[in-house]
Amino acid sequence: RGRCSSSSSDQARTADSTSELGLYVRQELGMDVQQAEICVFCKSPFKRSQLARSGRHEIKVLPCLHSACGHCLENSLRHNDIVKCPICDAATEQKSYHKYMCNFVVHQGIDRSMLDEQKAIACDECVDACPAVKYCQQCVRNLCAECSSHHRRSKSTLAHGLISIGEQKENSMHRAAFCPMHMDQPLEFYCETCDAMCCRTCILCEHETHSYKLLAGGLIERQRQEMRDHVGQLRDVATSLQERHQVLSRALRDFEGGIEASRRSIDQLQKQVQEALRERRDELLRHLDSFMAFQQQVYATQRADLTTRMVCLWRAIDFIEKVLMRGTGVEVLFLTMAFASRDILNSGALDAQAW
Image (cartoon, rainbow, N blue to C red; front, side, top):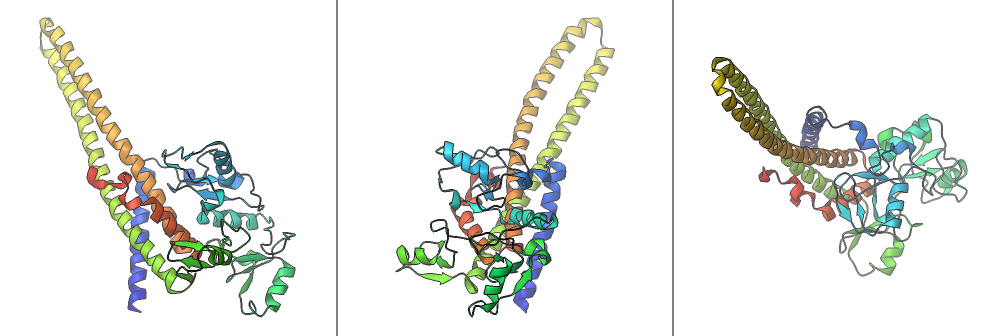
């Protein structure tokens, strides 16, 4: 009970901190919330993106945690050796489309919108892709009427909880995760030797002698807690960056106020001196303008860099926390692997001490 209480209070503090950070990013840095819901390549809203071969909108997350619609990512992979994010210029050589993590949070919103608009979601089981009427919470599958009936009659799935598609809440809507190597096989195991999720075929072919576990229980909780710890560290870095951004903004305002005060003094001096000093006045103003332009450029460059860092950091924290609050165990593990490969905490983009 004590651990649950501590976890709840930690999550509450996380939500408050992230809310404050998000508010600061939007109000002070001019971050448009809608930008998080558009493709980095085509700039179109995700809900209007082209449907994937699965018949659904598919949104992928780049290693930098910016998101792209599946169609644009496939085009980029088809025509380029390196995929480069247009927002932050982060590059990756990953050529396999199916190894890019899905944006689970955006998928939830899209799928909920489809139901609200009374659009059919295809069954995940049958080859005919009939309209789904039920959702299995254990299998994370949408099922048509016939497949739902089979599901209830099968001994292995008899006790599974089936709910009507229309009764699902947005944060409880999930899509089944399939192996990127054997795309008809669901991910069921976590190989601790390779630090990767895999299917039954992967276990037989490549991981047979490795140490692996089912995607359940303590494994998921350990990974979830580890990601919470990482988010806490990211939040500390974000707080430090925010404080430095505020200090720099105040310094810039003070500097500009000082420049204006100097200008007024010079103008007053001009009224007090004789015509013989006019040339001297002009010379002083030229020096002052030059100094102001130089210093403004310095401050503007530093603030722009901090702005970019803050926006990228906010995106990362916002995405991770939504997955942690809403995500399945599989989605959390996907996030863990993406986080580990990116090494966000040790990247130069989050080095608050540089300022």
